[in-house]
Image 1: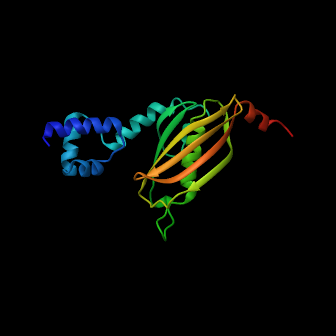
Image 2: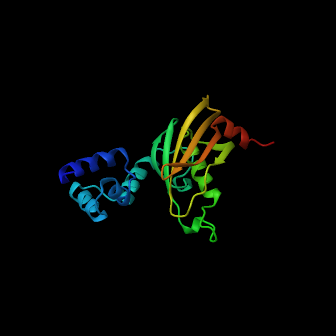
Length: 191
């Protein structure tokens, strides 16, 4: 493959999959990591951390139901009332020291906060969840969570499906019933 063709393909691949790392691109194209870095530099494409930060900043302004600091992971895509995507880079601090397996509450928190972030309401709270952990996650894996609103009932509640993958393998699946607007105000009323 010529240098020009590789660079064109690199640009196309990163438009479709902006979270590919230099290591993944190196394997995909059969060239060194340094070659990928040079290609990105020539094309004016930032590294994966910067690409992720840029996408996240664009989406945080749209979130209504929770504060930006309450989102676990980085919010990459958001279409209020419909869908969203977040990325969580796991590390040793999230894992059990003996096994290096990521504690389940970090995986759940990413999914739960994403389910709340996609709700097009000023108030939302998780009322019910059905979570399934599909396989263990090792510290250092990148978790990509995708949320989709699969049902909405007026302004009272929505059902959000969240699926999380690591390295292309499903690690978590959860359905969240999210109370919103009027339902949250009812919860605040004195008993």
